[in-house]
Image (cartoon, rainbow, N blue to C red; front, side, top):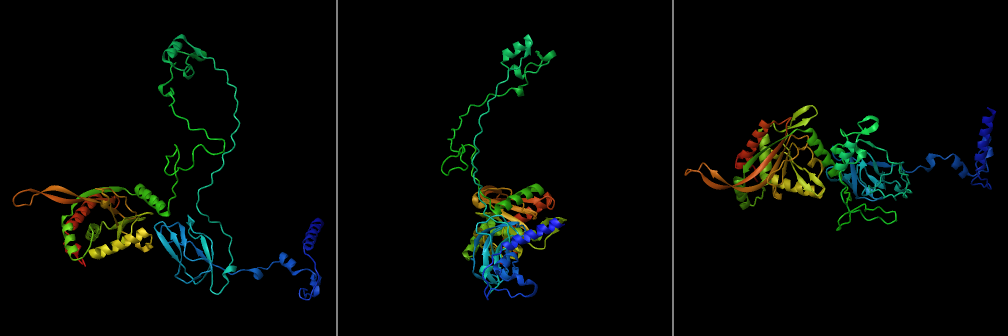
Length: 492
């Protein structure tokens, strides 16, 4: 006990010795009477060093800005660009930055009024998890330069790891070759080995005391090593510590064997890969195809063009699919965790290729829209998708997908279902074919038809083969008779 007291006293003396005394003045004398009179003569800075008060040196309390969830499937995002800089005033609703989600590049808006005090995650940062602190704001009228910065885990740009210098080569090991093992061969076994040019060390001893006899003297065919291929050895690297092959291929020059260039994947590409893998591994895909005659559609398009109404073949396809879904609601379903789920809306997702990957903006309530409205909506959504400016509500919640590769010269193909939807319609290009017209009063005659092949990929758990066949027949009827009121209504 006495030893502990002495150690405590020694620690106090050492601490007090660290405080510098200096000449007292009226301004800095501590006006302390009674029991603390002995403290007069020590500097105030020394006491602050030992007994620092947080209330005296605290900064401005920040308003935290975290990485938001800008889509239901988003788990992380990339900071593309900051639209405000430190010290800028921010009003609620102002855009702070552009964030690349798993679907598109979306602007992030501020929820508070104030001043952007500190940007914690810089432009170009990738893989920022949801809820990560990316910036700090202060309230209006406060000094933003004194904002308190909490302790954070550093968020850095995703860059290629530095190439580590190879370790110094180890000195070569010198080994003394062991004496070859003495083999015991029977005369018949020796004759067989010499005749076929086989290595006696590969033969298995089958006789007494390790004697190799003729029964199993030859090794199995699989054990005979094939002749080594003749190859040209790569040039020996100079003694500069550099690897023999470059880490990356050089543009315009053929790469050495074994080299490659790593391409960083965007969030959109990663999510597409995950969802395609999920779809093909968990959804039983079934496929059915049918040829559609586009003659009536082409004729109606020419008539509408004379009235300055411009619609594409794809607009007719979207309308025909939506009307078919309305007439066959049993196909307008999706799979949830509890089983089939009937939908009370018809939202058509159209696949649009962008530099960042494939995205499917939605034409909502397509069955009740006219062709001209569908055409205008599809054109606007496709342009926003290519510019990366789609809002989350413009690409989430579709009930049926359409993918058209006809403009690329593809005659027919099968598409992967976009979960949790039940179907996707793959549309090929048009082609001219000669076919018989049996309804001609003069007998069958040849005439040219503009045919288009469509393939329906359906979830076998929801849409069986018979239901898929009936849907395709309904779709073909609606597409080949565009004058029907259900399809051509409200053209204007």
